[in-house]
Image (tube, rainbow over all chains, first blue to last red; front, side, top):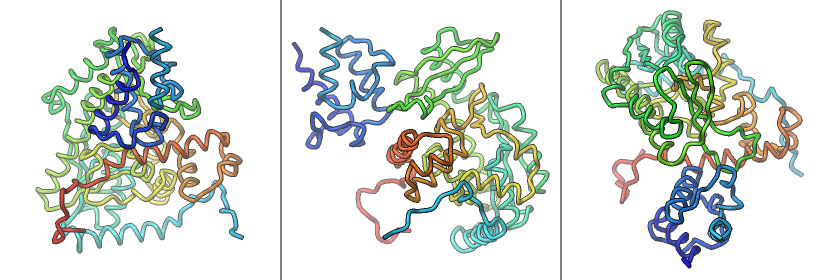
Length: 81
Length: 331
């Protein structure tokens, strides 16, 4: 089973922070920290759909599912299993 | 004990005569001492912002030193040309007409835009119209995700959220309009040794509602400190034509009429002005909610959204980032 958390962390660190993940906590709000904005969320969603083969509906694009690395991991696990 | 900031809907009322004197003096000073240019060029659309800017420029330096460039294209509103001509004639400024449709065709804008819309709405084709919209701030969405709204020739509406590639493609293509217009403004400015006046109001400037090196580029911005409500006040004070004052604010960017609130703020401009004022002056949302048709929670959400937009659009305001400061060239 893939390590969802590690993969999501690596994607966000590479895509948005050019590899610098020192300030990227599992439970830090990506929105509040300014790491991911509304365009960035589209990038996250596009990556999750392509990498993990899931389809994310409009009503699933909410901070509860996507705003922290931990919540993205939990969301993926619910979608996939 | 510090007194709570007072608030009423009249907080934005201007001393119009004093404001005009201040702005026109600043324009003359900037042209003479900083920019060293002989007059001003600006794009005119018949909208309230460019019309008031043109009036202030003409008042500052005389209408014979102001050139208004009319730059309609295929998607321009039917009244854009008439209203921009109206303001130019009313002020007595020179006007130049340059239809930018061929330039947009040359860079492939219309084809690229249509292709991006069809990625979301496959039925989109000849005779259809479209625009992009945001969810209303009243909906309380944490993410400001754009949707495309398309209207068939028969008037049927389809709305779909834009995915990443479609959204970026539409924005990139549409930005051609503002950048081509700015290129033409600077052509005329260079030709006459004039400077370029930008026309953003405070809301647009503050919230990054402009295209980098498009309508965001200018040598001076006479109304960037004024709330849109105040721009309307000045328009009335300056005696601008009723047809221009009564025209609903529009982005005049898409083939379907798009209010500026739909594109960016999702809240009517007069309410957004008061929210921005409230945010800037530390007005408690509960106090503000007594004066406008929004709940305390909604205003809190708008205050947060203002901060978010300032943060995400900061890069639009930045000059080029240098790797090392060059102390001989700092302004």
